Image (cartoon, rainbow, N blue to C red; front, side):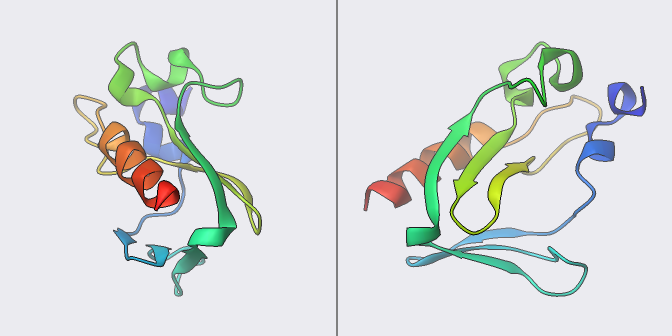
Length: 105
């Protein structure tokens, strides 16, 4: 129920996402250290509703779809980038495009 008011309830980590040529860093992953994913650790990137995170939670706008990374080392990672609570929008679509280009490099 709380996620209906604010999606951040489902995303307990809060940090900056930074893309480098050879790695992706997700800030403050365990409260202190960044989670660093090398290019070879990320197998796919997608931006879709799933059974775990559907339209009811994410909102009717496509901007509410989660950014999902399939990784070798950590399984599926769901992200909400630059989440804006009032509008329930994110930059997930932009990040999905960037990361897909990165994976293809």
